[in-house]
Image 1 (cartoon, helix red, strand yellow):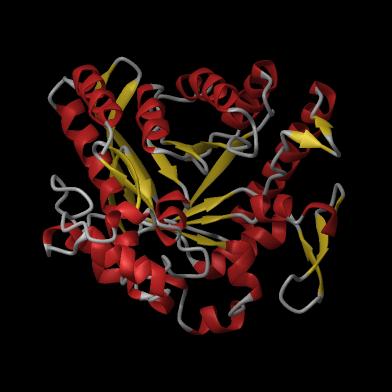
Image 2 (tube, rainbow, N blue to C red):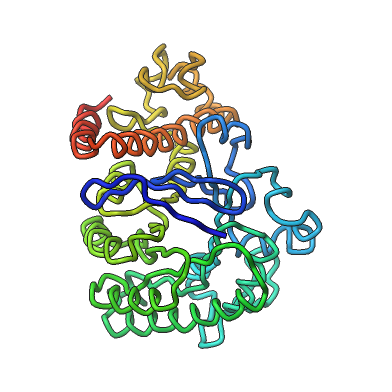
Length: 376
């Protein structure tokens, strides 16, 4: 089940409400990534407290560990991981792409050796739908081939990108057939591919829209391309998708990327950046980014960001303490910094929703850019 209602618009930017089987999601929204059934180092209650409404799981990794028998016994991923709000699952296409030369792609699907134990596996559109049905994710992603920016040492050509995009379209049709055969009552999203070529993006988009799916994603960005190419494709694509359906930009990105994406008409985002950067001492603040590993923070009594209301900042945790935890390799360090970064991203989306409701998104956007440019 999926229902999407537009509440307000300003230019191409949209404020919406998405109703799914496990709850309501206010958009635009950022979705924390929980690849193995957990957002690394963050308790489910902490995610709820900071305003997370929907999180991700990954079909590929959960298929390998713990396996479908375990998750089936729990009635799905929600009960297994103790998260009873909506979940979106990636189909496994990106993980297949990341295997590089370890996988073999054919019309039928992808053959590869398990990175866990070396078992020979075969992932197809049908298998992806079967896995995601067991997971019972509220949003199911079609199985696609993530078109690379570079192919065997050269930039992917238009003909290579076209072949990849057309394969993903054929797989999308197979996903729809299997999804319906399984009687899955959740929502299946298609993924627009086409590399860095606007004409291919349009061809992919038109074919997917003809399938009349509940929602659509923009894939194949943030795969090594220059930032200007990513921004060009993001500016070109979202507003060409149906206005009455949610639009999801996959795997993006920095705070500035999220603001630009919303300005271009995107409703949903995910990225590992907040938690991955947190584990490496890279923290996001209203006034630029902060590297907690820098020696200048050794005796710094200030919080990460005095304007931040996250648990880490509001409870008085100092930069000096976080610097100490990082230097000692203490696990509390990345837990506290992950809470901060995720809160920053989720609060950023909250601010954009408010600005759109009040008809001041353009002015808010200018102010945010000025704040970030000030530096910490």
